[in-house]
Image 1 (cartoon, rainbow, N blue to C red):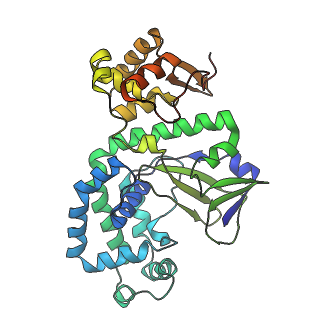
Image 2 (cartoon, helix red, strand yellow):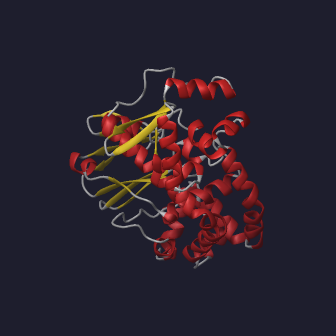
Length: 339
C-alpha cells in the first residue's frame, strides 16, 4: 500500500481548497471512462459524452494523449498539477501550470503513466502541454462551467461536512472518511493514501491540501517538498444532484420544496449543504427549516462551527410512512448533541 508519513506541523497546518482545474480533470477522467457512479452523473454523461467523443475523433493525437496521460495506475504529472492553495484561482490561471510544462518533461511523465514506451506520435510532438491544456479547456467550457455555480456549492458543502467531522472525531475519523476503502489513518503519523505498492513518502514540511471534486474519482499529487494534495470525491449524497425522490403525498402535505428539504435529513446536514443539494436559495431553505423545527420534524445541533439538522423520531416516521423504511434511518436517540 502507498502511505505518507505526515509531520505534526504539516497536518496541523493542512487545509481544504477548491480547484476548478481539479474538478475539470476529474470530469475528463469520467468522460474518458464513460461510466457513471450515480444517476446524476449518468445524466451528465448522457449530455456530454457524445460531443466529447466527437471532439477526440476530430483530433486523433489528442485522443492518444488523453489515453496516455490517464494511466492505469498513475496520471501524468502535468495533467494534475498541485494547487497552490494560497487563494482560489480561476481555471484559466490554474491551467497555465499545464501549459508551462516542458515538452520533454511531458514525454517523460507520459512514460511513467503508461508504464512503458510512449507511442511514437506523442514522442515526436512538441506541443503536448498545449494540446492537453486545450482538451481541458474544452471540458471546462462545455461540461463544467455551465454548472460550476452548483458544483461550487456542493464542494463548499462538502468542506463544511468534513470540517464538522474533524471537530467531532479528530483527524483519524476525518481522514478515514475521505476515500473509504482506499485511505485510512494508520497511526504514528502514517496516512495510507491508496492501495498501490508505492514506497512511503515523507511529508514533514510544506502545505498539505485536501481538494474535493464532485465526480467519483481522486488522486494524490505533490510539488517537491512545498505542496501536497489529496484530491477526493465528495460524499455520494452531495455529489448526486438527483437526490432522493419526494413522495407525492408528502409533497402535497408540506409543499414540494419543503418536503425536498425534509427527505434529505436522514443524515445531519448544514444549511449550506441543503442549499447545494436542493438548489433552493439560502433564505428559502432557512424558512423551510424553521417550519420543520416548529413542527417537531427536525432537530438541530452544533458540531464545531456548523449547525446541523436531522430528523426527529417524528420526522423519520413521517418520511418512512410515505416511502417505506430506508436503510439506516434513525429511530430516535439522535446523532447530534442538542444545544
